[in-house]
Length: 117
Image (tube, rainbow, N blue to C red; front, side):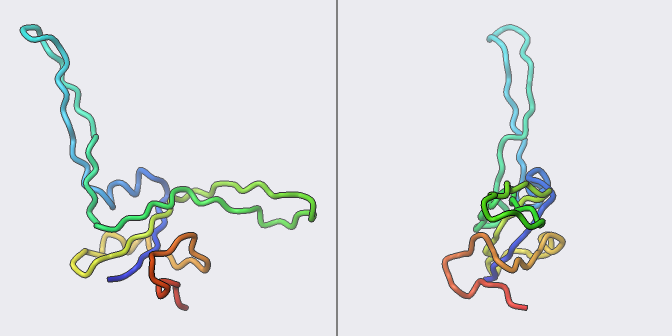
């Protein structure tokens, strides 16, 4: 078991790595009349058992601000996800997205998940 911190460019990018996307078909129409079939991607089956979606991570401006000013956080182009990888799960598709945050936003329930340098 291993705890991983991942950063994707956006949520859509994370879908193809973390989920099997199963297309669904819906038939529209009345019985006896022509129908139209609509195909949509609606089912997301997780490839990993333990996925914790952080989402877009916001940062504070790096420039100093006066003491009485509250800086407004801004979104950076990223989408954070934590995974507790089980022994039988494949890490290879996740490697390009691995990061080691200095101060993780969230951790799994054990205290040994802090990254080490």
